[in-house]
Amino acid sequence: MNVIGCRPDGWWRDRHAAMTTLVRRLERWALTEEADVAVVFERPPTPPITSAVITVAHAAAPAPNSADDEIVRLIASDPHPEQIVVATSDRTLAERARSAHATVCAAERLREMIEAR
Image 1: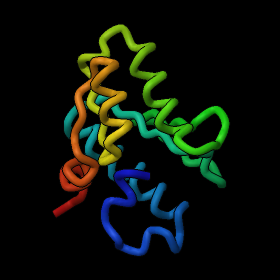
Image 2 (image 1 turned 180 degrees about the vertical axis):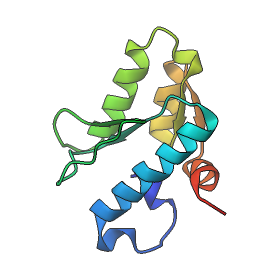
Image 3 (image 1 turned 90 degrees about the vertical axis):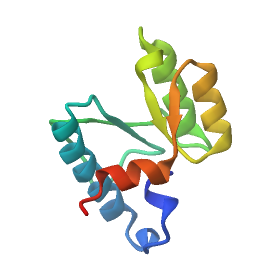
Image 4 (image 1 turned 45 degrees about the vertical axis):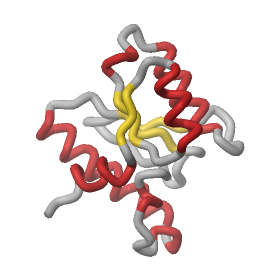
């Protein structure tokens, strides 16, 4: 939700639509950039959002910072965490990701990259 929430564009009125839009934009970007992309939500979207292009994941149990915990778990379980870039504007998550040897980019920067101009 860091990437979705980095702009006050009314996303909170329809969270599911905002999540779906993010996934579709990430799909287009991933195909263009030939990037391996995962998005992690706090809880599973209802109805589910699926993708054949990117990984759509969610925290095991919804709780404060549970998506952050899942992101850090994914970094730690990857054999090459130094190749992972985490898009976030959350200072604590950024520190945790860097401590796990990932790179961090600002959520707004990712949003700029994935939005059609």
